[in-house]
Image 1 (cartoon, rainbow, N blue to C red):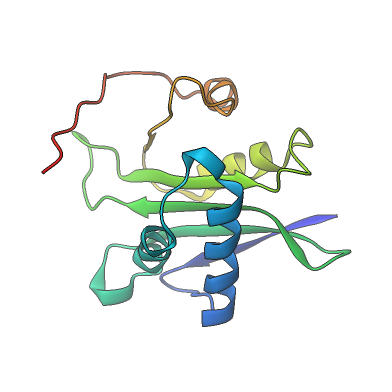
Image 2: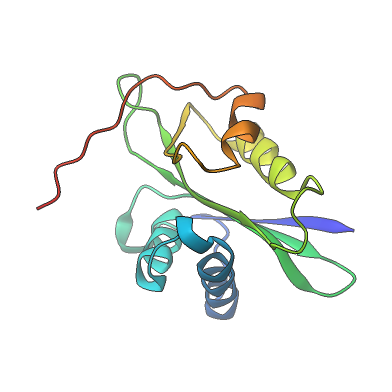
Amino acid sequence: MITIHTYTEERTANEQQKLNITEFLFHHLEQYGDPKYDIEKSINYAMGEDHKPGGIVLAAVNESTGTLAGALVINKTGMDGYIPENILVYIATDKNLRGKGIGKKLMQYAIDISKGDIALHCEPDNPAKHLYEKLGFASKYLEMRLKK
């Protein structure tokens, strides 16, 4: 049985929970991931640390083993209307449990509890793109970045 634990700026995770989620995302995001430091920053941002706008961190826990089966991080943008209020920063499921609906459960729960629109970035070859489309996400823009 999978249980979803919710952390926000009102209900923050303790340091060990944050570390576990960071390690999980770092390991299971594989080629779509970022350095641990960046993942940790997004989790702290979602929990409203340093007066950031906040967000949502979800942890899907396999109750029979007590281990993480999936995790998701959404950061509030502090905007609305012209830029979506939220951005999905990270979502991953345990690579040994993929295809069992855990990612869909995390996404649907995040959609249900988020206030406002949600944006996400997805590489064209990411298999999760199909899940996002099934949940109603559509490509509106081509993203371009200037790296300095």
